[in-house]
Length: 452
Image 1 (cartoon, rainbow, N blue to C red):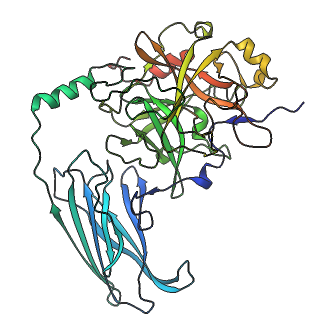
Image 2 (cartoon, helix red, strand yellow):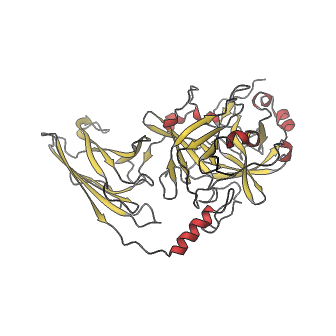
Image 3 (cartoon, rainbow, N blue to C red):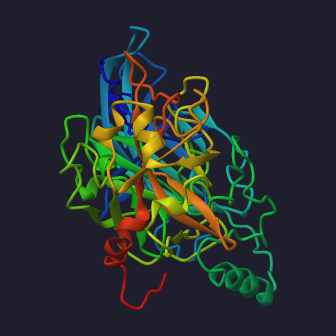
């Protein structure tokens, strides 16, 4: 009998479907590009002139909305990068414009409300992208003379609403409430949906410890895995998330972590925070006994983050390491992985409640499991073909309610695949890395004065 193929949940076609950060309302006009930790994010636009003949004078106007600016020393810039004759997708010869936009606020990224080239509309969307703040609106204007190779640029604030006064005690109460909840608690003072939505799309804020991990390959930014925030600086995920399909290690500088993300198509949403790793630490035993043994990694962030309604830590397991203590118990897992319609990733995260089974039951269920399990893994799932973590859910959490606090016990690691495909086989159990076996190793990366 042939073994079903081992299938780490990190999708093997990641880089063929990896997404750039398209602007939500101007996907054909401008894209967000991450340059690196020092330069951060910028926008690159591509456009065609309406004229087929040479045009020496180019004018562009760009409006964008951003969160209120405390410092207006720099409010943005617009620069021509290339101007040359090319064939359009419709096989016409036109003049192509490539331009660069820099902006003052990196998180959240701005919302472009208008882009005009020589008076022609490339993008016009005055509907606010964010409804929970009154934005400042910046206008960038650029004139480019191709004959002289000269360009002029101006920037000005064209809209700055009067701030609405918020009672100081209200602001302090909200911050204190979110900061003092401790780990494994949802901030129900600002959201009202409990964590009991089995098998459905979860509401924003009910999984504030759920983290998304992205990485760059060349200029393409791709979603790789889910992960779990466990402190102000530590994120726990799967080790295999940081290796490409050729088993090459992904560089730390190419990794981006987004806290508080809800919609996978909107990584720059208000309430989310784009952060960068100081280090990505793969467990030293990863892959030594079998291809996925000790499949766990700790991402250390460059700076301690502030907890909010949408960004909160789960608790680390601090009880017995015995797997028998959780056998028969149900835990919750969530992520943006493959859904029942065959989509590789879902736009919004979904959660499922699944039971843990004994090692004996897991090993008896299929002849492949003795090769991919060990004393630092456990199995869980329904084996009903439809419910459970799948492709794209790698690195995500399996959490349990322990005395009213949601506590991390498992990391989504691998499953068996359906014959002849790269799709997870939910007729078999899912393998999780047992976080309890790695608690001391995880804590070793924390600041000395921080307590879980």
